[in-house]
Image 1 (cartoon, rainbow, N blue to C red):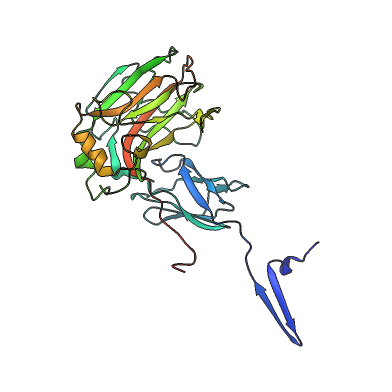
Image 2 (cartoon, rainbow, N blue to C red; image 1 turned 45 degrees about the vertical axis):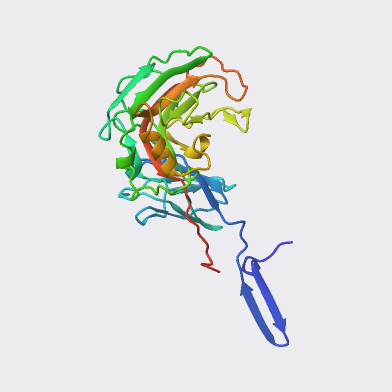
Length: 326
């Protein structure tokens, strides 16, 4: 039935000669934000915010109360929105996204530079590597597009863009100094009592080629065996099933909660710090392992993964309600 526009979303009450029209809003469920494509981007780059109910997003507040009301594009199904990163962001924390269905916070990890433990420019650059890790690289990649690009110096886990055999465990590996964890991550940066499900490692990567096999292994402590104190990032595997890896064509952030490691599950961030200080070797970092995953046989692969900005970040999401404490 066709309804006049001025009669939509109203209730009309009539009694004798009295009449009252009550206006109300019809919304979908409250929105939510599940992840951000790049959490340490540069001003002017386009990032994607993923979630549910992100319909007609019209305002995004970045940490430090930097507000954006333009250059926002929303998905019709509400599964994501994109935004051009504004200049002037100096603080870290959660994004607040507002649209037709209300508002929602992201996890608290955007621009969390306080947790940056290693890059190749100016933060804790004591490191060593092996296998097929490249030397320092500086060419801006990708050369075109409006998505996030490389930031200064970075490295690759496949320096010659070779084809890794199957299997090829620890085909390449990079070690950074992890003795700085306690000094760079004090209580004022991250609570030692935080659950390991609320704290994790982030790293920015750029991918060339088809990622059909192999995994990034983030090793937190060395000396307890290859499968201990580590988390895996395997984007071609979801719920135990193989899926195509969709390459965004720009740099993006991977996020690995410490609780993904059996050694840290159900524990606190203090337990992570304790494991680091008691490790046999003071080193941590990403490996590329071309190995069987969840009984899925590995295959030869020539995927090339560039990486930068290793950091530890909070993963908690602030609670928001339009109705306050009601």
